[in-house]
Image 1: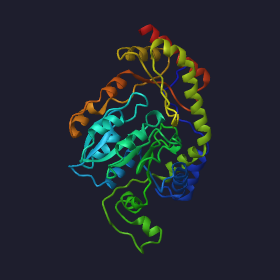
Image 2: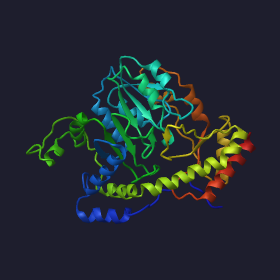
Image 3: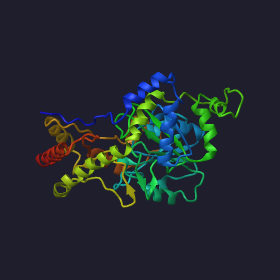
Image 4: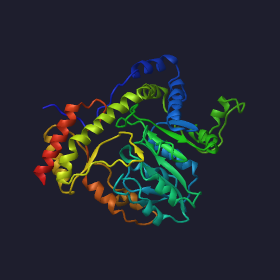
Length: 381
């Protein structure tokens, strides 16, 4: 039996050639030519004023939290249904977290719950575009219309090359973060980026990014020497990894077209039997152009999930679940400002199954996964 893995990273273009070129150049640390090239490509895709390549999306979120100058009296609203990084970056800077429920359509932050949570302590709201499908950004903007002091931080780890009403994901917050982990559409193994959309943030962000120094100002000829100016850390990505990322970004059209075919293949193969069996597929609102990051299903009941996943495992089909709601975790309880109720997050988390999804997944494999899933749901109903 041939195993269909959950994920399979791909050498999509000139990755090996570019890594060799970076090695030969003698500039393998951060800030090299491939870092600059990848940054330009990401700026073009998102409209960012500045792109700072980081070692991970977590690091990018941590850098955004540093820019906010958070303190113990500040809170940050974070969806409960997300990865830990969306919250821990701000808890690490001393803020408390207010966990917000998600709405059941896009699985993004619920604006109505945000409105209930909003108080004078809130400094920022973190938006997550689950599966590369934009959350209800307009709803969030309406809630925050009379709170210009509240910063939107966009966790667009799933979202690169997606859009919302034509606005690029990664371009919707004051700070936006991207991921280039091996499970993402574009990967260099481990990597990320902080995207800045306000000119006023650029100079300080460069200082924090460069270990608290004005090194970038020195290279730009703005100062005659550089020295320690502020807090900061070593956030920059090696130019070897940036070389790999550049090659992947050059193949953006091809990668996204193939991932769209996988998503569409699943959706078409599962539509009728899913409706019959009460299995819900991803919802894509009219306002959204997905980034085609992943494909999930919501089973009719939580008790079915381990049974369905076990049957698929026995068929050589590797699946996984996703986030455990943060508001129920030990860390979530420790760093929360106060308990909040997130019933949709808990329900979705217990029923969600992610299907194999990667660039080179064939139509035959998609059909095999879809058939196996439906057979497993039927046998466990």
